[in-house]
Image 1 (tube, rainbow, N blue to C red):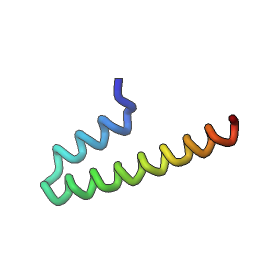
Image 2 (image 1 turned 30 degrees about the vertical axis):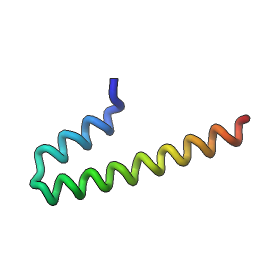
Image 3 (image 1 turned 135 degrees about the vertical axis):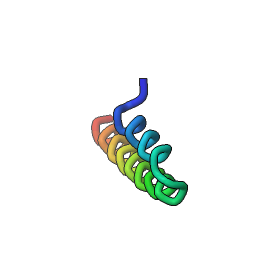
Length: 47
């Protein structure tokens, strides 16, 4: 089961035009990198 943000990004990208889709994918990838970075930071602090 994908997180809601993933399905939202995918639907937004498929609905929009090609340039709009690329923009949404870029925003989503930036968001997930930030989220992953925070998760790893949180995980490392708690070890």
